[in-house]
Image (cartoon, rainbow, N blue to C red; front, side, top):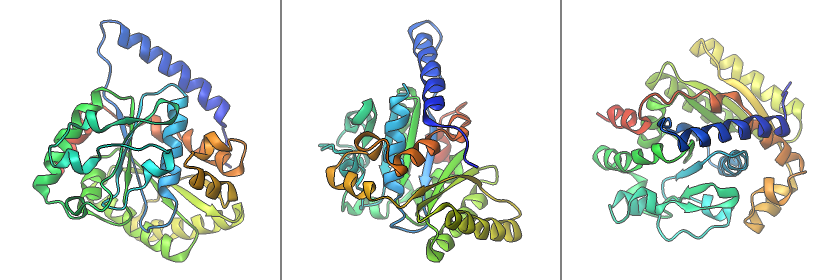
Length: 293
């Protein structure tokens, strides 16, 4: 059901990246970064693990990748990637440093802007504060090929503003009833603020494919019945002890145990065409700023 593999993806993306690099070396201006939001309705789905590994895989394929940890006060992407940033998104919000200065290199050449752990200003920012933060992030669209935004669980004002500007969003959930319910609520709100948004869905920590597909059938049925639309099923990631080991080692699983079942599944997610299909004709963060008004 989930066709394609990392080898095929890596080859095609590397060729694309080389072409883009050659183009950047010439007179032709390069395009803005594609921005893909990764979100979940409920905490504890493993969304940040999926996102951080996606960033590493896409960087390995030759893209200039930035991961922005937008989790409001409970950020952990820096721990998962094994980096120790001096500055975070809170410093950018407060105007202490530029967004480019806050971005630190991570595994495989990707970059990270860490979230503000425990920062009150990020827990409930005002529209004016968010607008200022979005303006600070906008210049980075000229410096990267792909920006992944790792959102905190739930329906924060920042998440909805991102959804309003997004072309594609990746929803990470589990097969549990509560996680499915919260993912449905998030998907519903995303379609309300942005009727043209395209969503892909990943079922994480599934005990087996049958469980993942059964959960997908329930979600798809509810979305079709009540919203007359449904996300795209991107794939599922199995429950795997290798994930726990990677978290403890602060090393992405696709680097530490690339032959594990979870790493192989995340590689298939990284090959999702929706990541490459994102439109980048205008500034994503300028669109997000407009959504706040």
